[in-house]
Image (cartoon, rainbow, N blue to C red; front, side):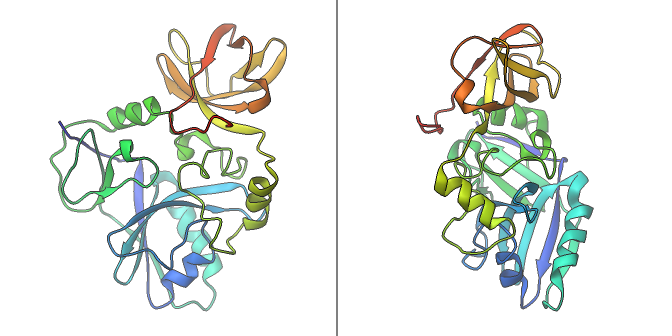
Length: 263
């Protein structure tokens, strides 16, 4: 049975006008020029050095793009876009409409989540037959091993590839320039990916956010957000083998099905 939840942790910004698509295309990690009305894509706005500032869903509209961003970061996103706008004929404005997620079955009017089919779909505005809480959706996402960059990545500290954007359709490496493109492309091209967000399993409640993950006496990463039995963690790929601990407890890496064997 399809489950539907309202995501109050997310909010919307509309970018419209004649230059809306080329304006965003030159900024974001995702191709915006070919985004069709009604289509949903996943991407990010990075800092010039290539670190993650905002994770975004991009929903195509006839006269522009609707951006789905963390609610507590909406104003900061609007300010950042206004800084880049210059002479572009584009309007940036908040939209007070709900964000819905549907999973465990098809739901009419929901665009497929571009990250993974198992994540279901998203819908913006209107009404929906809510049958679950946002926490249920977050539990579903975590069970699939998918990070929530808005919660797991401290702004301007994490590279998008570390948050698995390259594996979850969040970066179009063929589109050309975007803010932070040089660092992002170089990491992918040279294979210099040392860290990734991966789910951990353990017994009991999650370790504190930022708790150190150890491989013996060596630092292997840090715990991010989680719940009883599982949490996301930013881990060093060269220190996954062996006994891992956090706060003195044994933890185990759980490799998602969508993660390539090579990491």
